[in-house]
Image (tube, rainbow, N blue to C red; front, side, top):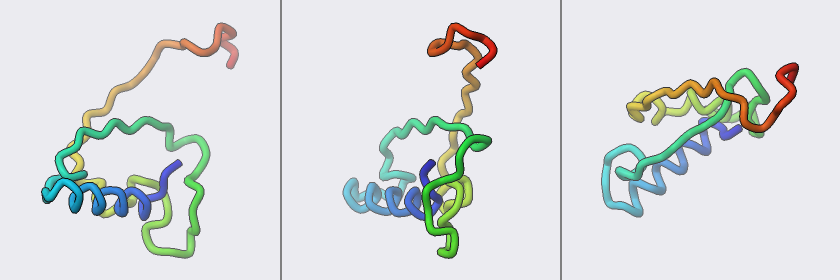
Length: 79
């Protein structure tokens, strides 16, 4: 539920701390979530204060998508 604006801010901080222009300063970052669930908690009147995939840094992240298919939390498959 992170906003694009916050994701860009975290990217900028990591780059400055690590003294690197690589995305997130070269730190390996793991994202998990479901964009079909709740929207980010944000002020939608501000630029990039929407879904994380609208962040300026999103296209530079070179992510690998993993699809999780096994149920671990629920034993009732109805949920």
